[in-house]
Length: 119
Image 1: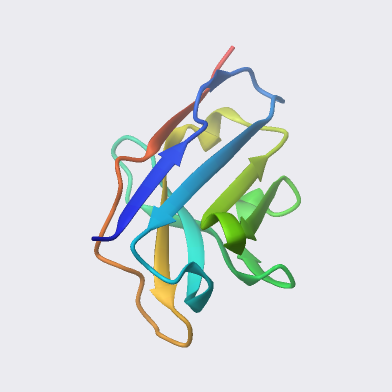
Image 2 (image 1 turned 45 degrees about the horizontal axis):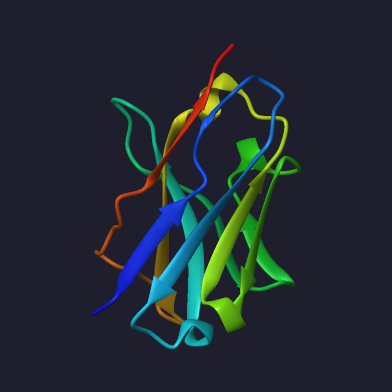
């Protein structure tokens, strides 16, 4: 049974930093592309960043230069380092997966982790 367990969300002031983690079980982690999505209240879920390997990453334009996605295949974990946080980054953050060279992300979603940026 596949599981995604996200953690690391918190209340942080504008300009602050957080690192999110997502541990995935039930798959051969290295066979999958991984991604972070987020969903703010009243808005659609959006793709924030994705990673195939450390040299193959894609970012939402509004987070480029502030967020860094990385992965540790030995720990089956994907990370999202978030710096210079803004109030508009407030959302529930989720990780997701898709097999290499497949088009669609999984229909499975974990519980997510809440990030709130506020003074």
